[in-house]
Image (cartoon, rainbow, N blue to C red; front, top):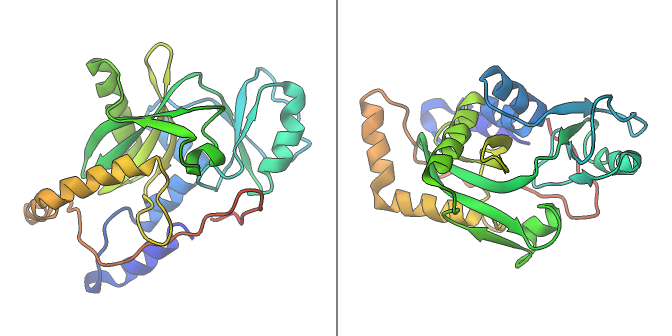
Length: 265
């Protein structure tokens, strides 16, 4: 489960160190409500939301469609539902609640979607996500050819800087360290709105990394192959937080489409 592997590794202390976020940050980032609360506390823009726990829940007062439903503790867009009509809420909630006992109802931001890789305190070039049809759901995320990715994304320099700054702030708000990825929606006015955070990139066989992560992981590989580890180790000797080397394989199990997954805490 998310956070437990890092906790077990961390208990080894000086005998075994690892790259990436610790167990506390991992659990926070995997929980969409905790992540949003951290962002709000840090003054980081995030989409309006409410938590629902019953398929019979009524439409919240003051809300208008479209909205997005997300199981609070799931990843890879498992259980993600787009709701365009008030009378579609119950059916969508029933499906989303198959994957967790709580569902995040979030206003749907209309705009462009990007993902921002984070490496050792620096935001990498933006990757823009453009599904060929529909939203960026499980199918479009893991089906080759269903979504196009553009890196670097074509934003004006000042907008790019704001997006990168917002992503880095969100990553730090959950206690992230070393490397990860933050998803950001860009409004039609060019303002970044934080979405989800993934602090463990899929990188180990036999699990194939999500297509979206490949530009990020390629850039990570390229940076580290040019002496990145040595540079971070030198920083560690100066009292700065290191990007630590490791030999620990990371493997995750993803639920298959159409089958209910087990929620993780």
